[in-house]
Image (tube, rainbow, N blue to C red):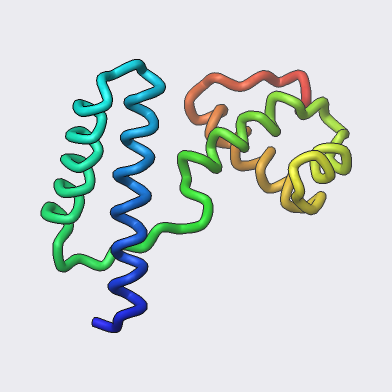
Amino acid sequence: MSSSMAKIRHELFTEIEENVIRLCKELKINDDVCKKIGCGVSDFIADFYAGQVIYFPAQTAFRRGKKDMQIYKKFNGNNYTELAREFGYSDSGIRKVIARVHKQARQQGTYETSHF
């Protein structure tokens, strides 16, 4: 494995550890416990996924889903351009989001018909 990949791998585990520690501290957990939890999470991921290649897409479905719902909730039936500007999408991108969320909501029986 190249040294640049080793560096990236090291940075990933360092970031994971530091973020877990930060989150624990925000929850007012003792500093020593935070460090143990951070190291434990990082070590677990390294051991459990050892030898595997994992791809992290730029925008996971979970994050996309949250953003999609924000867009959908602000949608009034004809404000595609405003939403596109606000969220950094094209008009057609907003239309795709609305269609995707509408389809999911319809399948789950949780959508409002006021905009459609």
